[in-house]
Length: 208
Image (cartoon, rainbow, N blue to C red; front, side, top):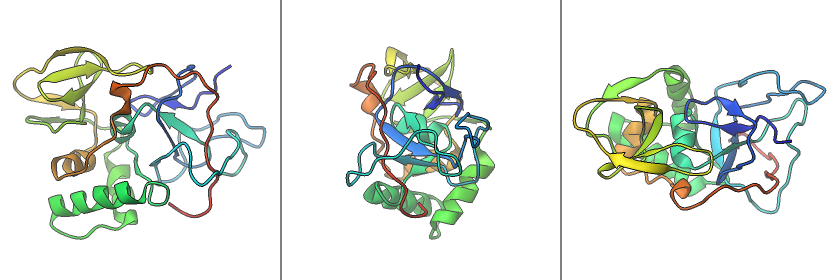
């Protein structure tokens, strides 16, 4: 049976077969018996590679971070996560510098974490959105060019014409700013179908 560790664009957790292209975490979500008992712990919410230096960890370790799985960057960003500073160092730097360019001042990891924590669970209204943002129409949809793609755990699908005018945005403003100022998300969900292989995640070695 799949574990409830697959993340949707709202940040909710689901038990579905599809794994997605990325792992990540938001702290320890299980109790001492390995049961999922919380949505998050702490403000460090990151998107990681599923393979890194051969490291592997269990999926339900008590008192350690709990691996989660995302279709791609668009889902992870919409859910309120950011790229990991260790296994995705180049992407983290690109994200951080893009946010800094938008704000006009340098940003550290803690600054990004606090900004995203304050923005999670809210929506905004915006126009002229960058590729990679996720909006809410008949459900979560990915903005890409002149099309909107519907979310499914197996991949982005059912493209429709992008409407004119303001749209409700799920992606937090900080990540929208990063997308606008040069951060290029990995949109693996546009090309990959359902992945029902057993999830793996690498081990924690430092604060990311």
